[in-house]
Image 1 (cartoon, one colour):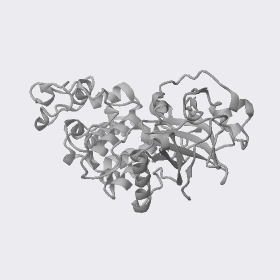
Image 2 (cartoon, rainbow, N blue to C red):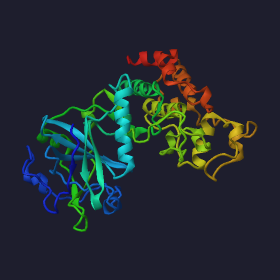
Image 3 (cartoon, rainbow, N blue to C red):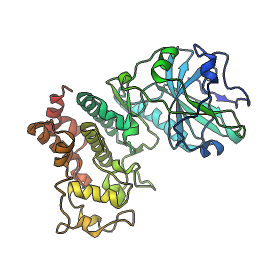
Image 4 (cartoon, helix red, strand yellow):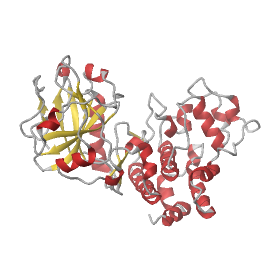
Amino acid sequence: MTEEKIPPTPYGDCASPEYDELDDDILDEQAEIEDVSEPLERYNQGLYYPICIGEVLVGRYRIKHKLGWGGFSTVWMAYDMQYQKDVALKIMIPGEKGEYEYQMHNYIVQNVRDVSHLVTHQGSFLLSGQGGDYHRVLVLPLLCPSLSYRCRDLPVATRMSAAKQLLVALESLHDIGLVHRDLNEGALMWEMPHYNTATEYEWLGRPRKMFLGNHLWKRGELVEQVTIPLDLVGSKVYLGDFGLVIKDGTSVRVKQQSPYPFCAPERLHGADPSLASDMWSYMCLFAALYFGCNVFYGNGGKLTGTSWVSQLGPMPKQWKGKFWSPDWYDDWYDDHITSLDPDRDLAHRFIQLRPDTSQAERDLALSVLHKGFSYLSEHRITAKQLLQDPSFKALMDMYQC
């Protein structure tokens, strides 16, 4: 795709005359939206690019719905009028973050052997922003955003298939020495069918939106993030969000990972992200898919450390005094004081969350979990090893994955 730098849209009506099945009442509908957690100051600061439903970007992509937002971008469902298909547009904040992710996408496409389970861009362009800044836009395949806690309502077989597909995707990155560094529920995306606009709005609901105000440099709307019905979620899974990917062995200033329930413990003790820390995060996702909820909790402080110790036992003594937060306890590292909590350890999770499982299945699942939840990264199983692990393969066979 030829890269263009598009000048700012003049203040006024965002809607393009090329609606392609969008009705005027959809474009004009204004409603009090329920999700106001999106940081509005990012629009005021010129970080988020203001968008309206129905707006057409670069004369080609008509905005249809809001898929999500994060620290460095907003993501929109759009219709590609040139190729007559739905896509996702990830509009980055100005600066190096967007350019880094764009370059990392290019690197992955050029070097990863199998990208079939990776969300890689199909093109890119630049939009002119506030004060002469430019926003990098990545054109991505349209996929279902993270299901988060709703994933528990999917059949267990579907969730186990997702765990295996995710491991294949991660192994393809690790095979060329790339550390994802930000593996969590938000990076896991699901296949979804595509329909025409009228049918999509029947399934997804019309965009709920509010005018952002006359003070912005460009007209825009705060649009409530779409919720995809589980009936529309397909069985194929993809790994995305490559804005923090690094080569293994790279030192970074911020060691810890948020959200903390997916952060490897060595990263909260001053270690850099690594292939092994990715595997801890993967195992957290595996457990969430298997049990239907996260196995660890906390905000990176004493609750996080206690969560690890109560389920896995004391942490290595050589880590004592290195925990990044002042909320830590000496007995996290003491064999004689701290022991497993029999009511909260991993084995007890089966009684609480999967009472239907046989003892044979519990033994297989516990074997997999303990190989990934080894405190010492050098003892943690790799993605390639786990794909060939007898316990993992037997567990997947139980669910015909």
